[in-house]
Amino acid sequence: METLLPFAYLTILLVTLGCMVLCDWRWKLAFFLDARRATILSIVVVVAFLVWDGLGIATGSFFRGGSDYMTGIILAPEMPVEEPLFLFFLTYLTINLTSGARLLLNAATRKEQNA
Image (cartoon, rainbow, N blue to C red):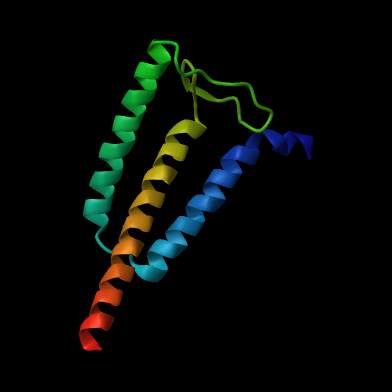
């Protein structure tokens, strides 16, 4: 079991990302609504976050903490492989939440108009 410990964080990220995909599929929130727009938005936001991380790393504000739960694979100095995946997860979660909120608000508005 100890050999799997370094993959715990990556596994949790992948499982929760899978949950985001299921929510998106069920309610057509992001990629299942408009794949092109969601892809462009995700790429732009993740790249912006990676630039932000790069600036934080360059100024010494951000650093990679040691953890037994991370793979130890480093993409760049102080940039673990899990970081871009986490940033994509945050982006996808935000798209899903804002799209879901819009759907709920639109449904409530339609309900009021029909009452």
